[in-house]
Image 1 (cartoon, helix red, strand yellow):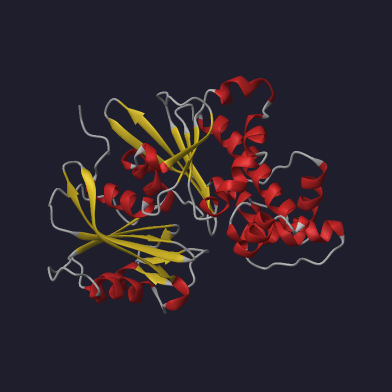
Image 2 (cartoon, rainbow, N blue to C red):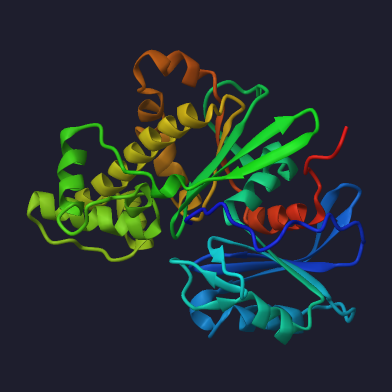
Length: 342
């Protein structure tokens, strides 16, 4: 998910207990919840997940969700977490969505009095504080979480990242363009794959390789380097073949992905000073959880020369929570951990 430092509006800091819809809009799925604030936390009343390919547009998805609600109480407000740039006319520019989105048209069609947009990984960063330890799988670093900025990053349709910065006056969440930074390599094989990418572009962003579509690109580039035909055209097919253990090209593709990811996130940890921890999210990693745990991810994350000791002190966890985007969008809308005057 490409992360842009853009909002359609500021959060309203709503205090009403009236339910509203919160949606996490990705390039493959839309996750929607009927939520409300309850004692400083988000309460999910109803929840569903929809495939983007089954609908003509986002308004159709949200309308289907509203029609299926058990509650007859009218819903008058909503918020969506999505990668994209909102223009003044309410049109959303996003490279990763399967259809155009007009925020104004959706608000009008659904009859919402208030409708907001928040960056997708900014929402995930807001949700981290609401996720229990049972949803976390530790990959590296100490069990105890130190104070400091927290990096939330993950591959999905693109690669998104945000930094959650604590302060005495509340929490600041910084959305970033990390997925658009240049992909770097650490060995001869990765350099050869990067040269394949450079055949048709002058800039290879991180998410060109480290995303769901990027996994497919890695598979095809690695096949080209080895002079063999690629066998798979979807992230799921590559992951399943790699896990089965009988497809060397698929397994090497996934190993390449995990190594590059570890290296990239190590760079981000240093760039953003994320000594408060790193949470890995996104739609791809839960699908390759077991492979990731056995891969070179941690070794490559720590392989930063004299900064290795500093990185060893940073807890790195995989967040396994399907409702993160929904919780975060709702938390942002409610202003649960925004800065407040002292």
